[in-house]
Length: 76
Figure (tube, rainbow, N blue to C red):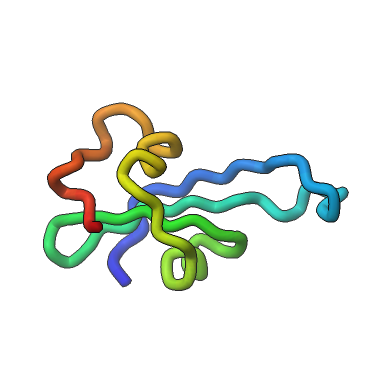
């Protein structure tokens, strides 16, 4: 796993999570080849970086908008 360079936490309504204690965590991870990828899940940022579902470039841009993400550096 590379370094976590960005974290986005969002909470959404849930039928079973009445207290709102289960945020959706999205992490942007820098790779070893000067590239990066984005993962989503429920847990600590470190856990999500290791075990989360990988997002497409387009999905990652929804969590990290602006010039931060470059398609040519996004790891597929």
